[in-house]
Image 1: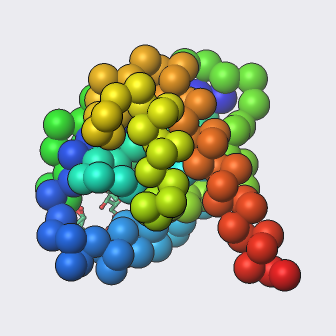
Image 2 (image 1 turned 60 degrees about the vertical axis):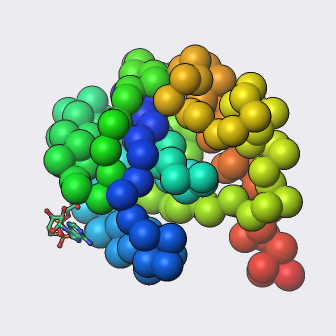
Image 3 (image 1 turned 90 degrees about the horizontal axis):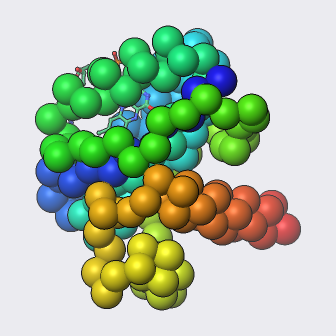
Length: 145
Ligand code: FAD
């Protein structure tokens, strides 16, 4: 099992962001399901931070396809390692756009005044995505009542 975490800068107008992220997530779920890739996509302050996990060859092929996507640039791998278990097993892909109320969490975790995930150490980036995962899980459970 391989896990890869990267950060990139998106090239999508703010007005189109929700719709475009939905398109990306729909394609991701469709593709990732067939190759046993799971993960999480954080969308915040002009940046993407994404975890991909699954069989090494599937993660590599998926990341290679993502790298060529013109909807983002400046992709930087923050962490790539063999992992004993999945951290994002619930989702073939799930995107989380942070709300203003979540900003303080992100700023603290990213250790800067403005969100600049490309400078994060890989372990810190992983902790950031785990925090986002937990927020997402709580939000989904709350929605279920
Ligand atoms: P389709 O989704 O049908 O797209 C066909 C082609 O059109 C692709 O080359 C695609 O890149 C391009 N395209 C589609 N819409 C646009 C657009 N609005 N602007 C520019 N080009 C466009 N894919 C995954 O499979 N798994 C992932 O986890 C994943 N994560 C992603 C994360 C990010 C931040 C981004 C930007 C993209 C991600 N993608 C992911 C999408 C990936 O880059 C490819 O677009 C997708 O895998 C291609 O899927 P498809 O062959 O089903 O083609």
